[in-house]
Length: 169
Image 1 (tube, one colour):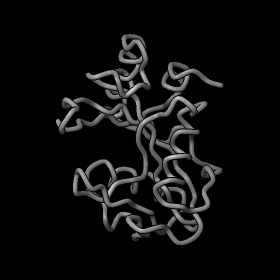
Image 2: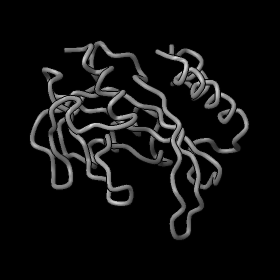
Image 3: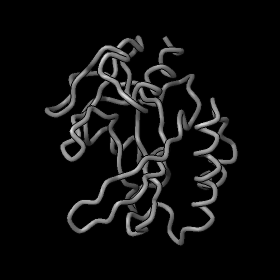
Image 4: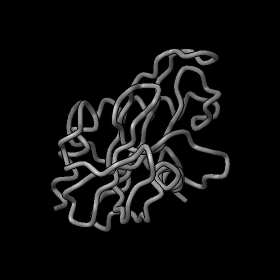
């Protein structure tokens, strides 16, 4: 299994913003005592999946209750996850109930993103160091998740993921 640092070192960023996030992630990976633990209050690594259908025309997004946005499925790395890839796959399965596989042509990871998480009861504001994978999903998603035309229901980093995924049509 590749270490977190190995994954980040091998990743080729597509633009300056993503390269800046990759470099910051490398610093966090070295500085944090347990980089994937949500007990790291300043920042911790998370894993998510941008799920597309087999023709790469639609994406399955989840209605995020706390943030009030449509987002790709993903979340915290659990102690039972053997890798970031495994965490992304588990989170996507839990949040969509689709049959999922990694996209055969996409790099692993597919995208890197650092984003702020606002303070909520019992949890200070912090950053998610999100390592993202492109997955192919089949089936009908569960309640709270739905298929959308690729790029139609996207804003911010989700729009960037959609633009990157469109190259795999």
